[in-house]
Every structure is written in structure tokens, then in C-alpha cells.
Length: 218
Ligand code: DX5
Ligand code: ZN
Image 1: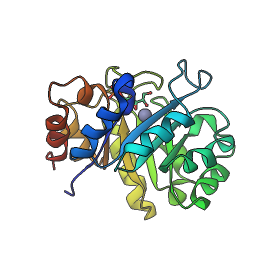
Image 2: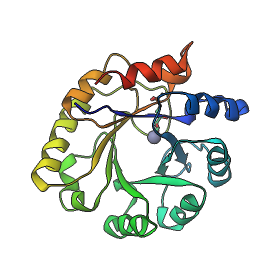
Image 3: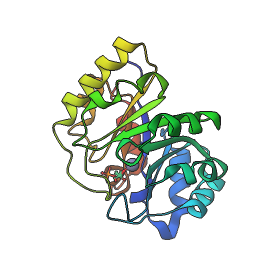
Image 4: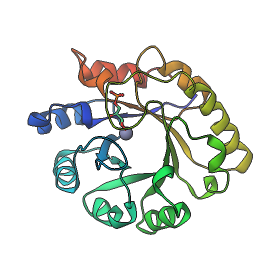
């Protein structure tokens, strides 16, 4: 098994000490920084936007993985690319013209991802998987950090892996929400490539050790 990509979610960091939190990630075994953008419309919460993403980029030595939980992402993807995003995921449920949204992101020269909510079946990705660099499987309902992992995610990982293999897609499988010691290994065994972890990392006594522990699972 290849080593997983570990993406700590900055949503769980201490926002008053962002620079030191980012320095911790820089010094850790993390691969990406997961940046959660919430608009209070698509999800019932507001997090951060373009200026904070720029500020994170200024200090981060790791690529920014931007998760847009917003309506009308087409109006903002270019600004997030300018702010430093190297991966941008949009939500299937927020995009009436998903193929166009994906092409728009790819035309910016960065990785394009599709995120799906817990209630959305993997099968809706059948006609977009070949164009997609990453699928973000939400393992909680998007909007908040620190929620309980939804067990049905394992089946979705296996179904998605099968779809990817059958179509020859190169898409990475990312798991987002409630990832911790109790589920990470099983998620990797089911076919996950990228683990996002917020509270599990930032509420730990030694966040770097937690990141290393996730990295060492495969
Ligand atoms: C939820 C966000 C997640 C969240 C993960 O809407 O998309 O990225 O920050 O945080 P934990 O790992 O605490 O569930
Ligand atoms: Zn996220």
C-alpha cells in the first residue's frame, strides 16, 4: 500500500495563532493543508474566505487543498487559485453544471476535486470520474469540525474504488470528517488515498505525532 496523503484541516486550528499552527504543519509529516470554505448558504456555518487563504499560503510550505462548501463556486475558483490553492474541490450538490465547474478548475492548471455529501451515492460520479483528479467523500455532514464519523463511508470508499478502477480514472479518494485512530486504517484498507483530519490532529497534545501516526498506517 502506498503511503497516504495526510491533510490536516486548518478549521480545527487556533485561528488566533495561525502562523504557529502552520509552522507545526510545515515541520510535520503532513502533505497538504486542508482549507474549509463555508458560505452560510450551502452549509449552515461560515468559516473563512480568500484573505485568510492567502494568509495561510504566505506561511505554508505545503500545498493548499481547498474544499469549497459554497454555492456558485464558479465565481470564486479563480480567486482561490490566486490565493494559492493547488487543489480545489466543489460540491456535487452545489453544481448544476459540474462538468463545466471541473473544466474551469483544470483550466487554471490545478487539481479539480468533487465532494459528495453522506447522502449522495457514489454512482452519480459515473460520468464525471474520468475528468476528476480527486473525490472528497464526506464522512460527516459538511459544516462543522469535530463531528462523529458516519460508518456507511467504508462501503462508499469500496464502491468509489471500484468505479475508479473500472473506468481507468486517476482520481484520488479523500475522506473528510471524523477521521481518527479508530477508522483511519480501515479507510486506507478500503481504498482511501487522502485523509483529512481536523480535531484529531489539533486537539492532540502532540499534533505532529498524530500526523506521523496517520502517515505510518500504510
Ligand atoms: C467539515 C469539514 C471538514 C472538517 C474536518 O465540514 O469539511 O474538513 O474540518 O474536521 P474533523 O476532522 O474534526 O471532523
Ligand atoms: Zn473539508
